[in-house]
Image 1 (cartoon, helix red, strand yellow):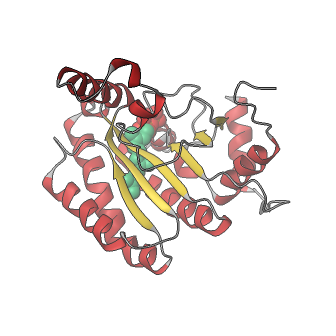
Image 2 (spheres, rainbow, N blue to C red):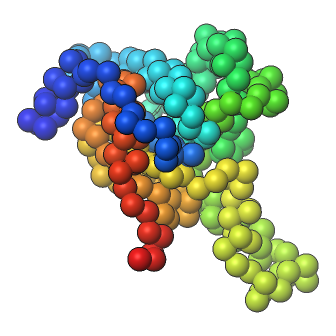
Amino acid sequence: MIKRLLARLSNSSMPQVELQSTENIPKHVAIIMDGNGRWAKDRGLPRVAGHHSGMKAVKQVTITANRIGVKYLTLYAFSTENWKRPKAEVEFLMQLPQQFLEIELDDLIANNVQVRMMGYEEHLPKHTLYAVQQAVEKTANNTGLVLNFALNYGSRLEMVEAIRSIASDVQAGQLQVDQIDELTLSSRLLSSNLPDPDLLIRTSGELRISNFMLWQLAYSELWFTDVYWPEFKEAHFMEAVKEYQQRIRRYGGL
Ligand code: FPP
């Protein structure tokens, strides 16, 4: 509680954070945007007000990531487990991508951002999928930041699907068992067109990965903050990047 209060106090008066060096910027940052519900509850608001406020943080982090030269930003917007939430909350979450893109797409295009989606299209409402696909198409040739929405994404399901596809190739005689290596699996994941995340950020004080990019995070640097996602500002993102810049990555070596 005290930690959270301190985090919130520091948030309200957070000075501008500047990087000391433009070296060693994480190429791929992945974020578990958590704490929308608790942020709303603290204010006596419905949970969906937290999700709505979370959109502003998405905008701010996208601008900052693009500005400092991050190449890929993956945001966990809806997991394959989030369908278990009350119907009204799911429906609200499903109209957020559309709402966000209606407001921000022109600006994203002007800033050369490329929108992508990582997740299963099945079960997504038509309007959600249409809005995302339109944005993906319209930004496909942009060469700046890749803004990748993990939407109806689950890492275990992704691995099961990849293993099924490998097994089916083996069964068909198109692949030998001893040809299977790490690349065989990673090239069949939904993230096959992305490098592994260098930095994972999770907000809200929870210290877990929640079925997010389990394979891809094997050597990522982890950064946790008590700040709830709707309160996550440019300064927090910069803090995370600054700390990342100090980390020494050994990948199991010396
Ligand atoms: C987790 O917080 C958050 C989500 C499941 C949804 C994340 C979505 C957004 C931040 C908005 C996305 C915006 C776009 C543009 C797609 P929680 O509800 O689990 O919070 P709690 O743990 O405090 O209950």
